[in-house]
Every structure is written in structure tokens, then in C-alpha cells.
Image (cartoon, rainbow, N blue to C red; front, side):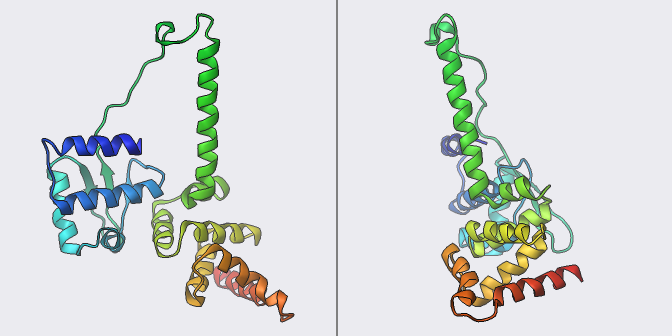
Length: 232
């Protein structure tokens, strides 16, 4: 999904298919969740996350969600137990297709058009690489494996509670310790939350601090404990 086109189309829709302020807030909240999930056609969003992102109550979110469904902005499927609903946002803009012809500025031999296409592909590759570095969901898929909806939901919650950077850092530590699965990374995130770590620098200082004071490597002991918990 093209984020800018989606927002422009959304505001265009308001001219003849207007929404309440609550429904607008919920739509943007769902867009943000789906952005973190790397623009999936279907994605889950826990009620607690939506309440935090919209500053709305659960009853207000349900009312706004029904309005979005009735006016064709989204569909969703409820799931049993404590599982979050699965959402699908409607695409409000038309995808552009077609190629640039010589009359549109391309040279006769195609060299200019070819160079432009190569530059576009290069930029897209760079953007994808940057997203892997910044987006924990992309990092997981690139370095660990297939991302299930349940793990994606857990990662989104941790990213909202701490940060994308800390989630990625916990995954890196899990991989370095030969424990490439999210349960190990989540144990690290729980420890950071309990000890007040809220930034990447604080997480790295927490690992270096025991060594600088000449004390036993407390971080290693922590990881050993986490390994045992995961292996049980």
C-alpha cells in the first residue's frame, strides 16, 4: 500500500462519504498498526493497542469500527478466546499501470528510460534494506524466519511499549546467543522493562556495565537463565 496515496484518497472520500472523528482516529490507528506489520493484506490489532493509539474507550472503538465497516473502509473478523480480530483495510485509490513511452520523455534508444528504471530499482532496494534495519517485523523475517500472526502481534505490542529499536536489539541478541526465536527475545524485553531500560543506548550500557566495574558478568548470567527458561 502507498501510504501517501492512501491518506490522500481517504480525505477525498470524506467529501462524499464522511466519517465521525472517532472513526477517522481509528482508521489512522489501524493504518499505523498495518504499517508496522509491513502492509499486510490482513493483520491483527489488539484492542489495548487501538485504545492506546486512539485514546478511545473499547466501546467507542467498537462503535467507530462498525461505522468504518458500514461505509466500506474496512472489514474485520472476530476470533475466539483472547485472540485479536483480523482486519483488512479497503484500498481507496486506484493502482497506476502502464509504461512510459518515447513521447513522454524517453529517448529513442531507451537508454534514458533504462537508466531511470535502474535508479528506481536501486532506490527501492535501498528503501527495503533500510526498512529491514528499522522494522522489527521485516528484521525477523529476514534473519529468523516466517512471521506468524501471533508473533507479529506480540512484536507490535512490545514495539509500542518500548520501541522498534529495542525489539530489533533483542532479536539480535537472541541470534547471537544461538536462540533465534521470539520467546528468547521477549524474555530480554521483559528484563529491560523491569530494569527501566527505554533506549538502545541504555540497553547497550546495561550489557557493558558489569564488565566496566570488574564484577562478574551479570548479563551472561541473565542470558544463561533465559536459555534455561526457554529450553524447559
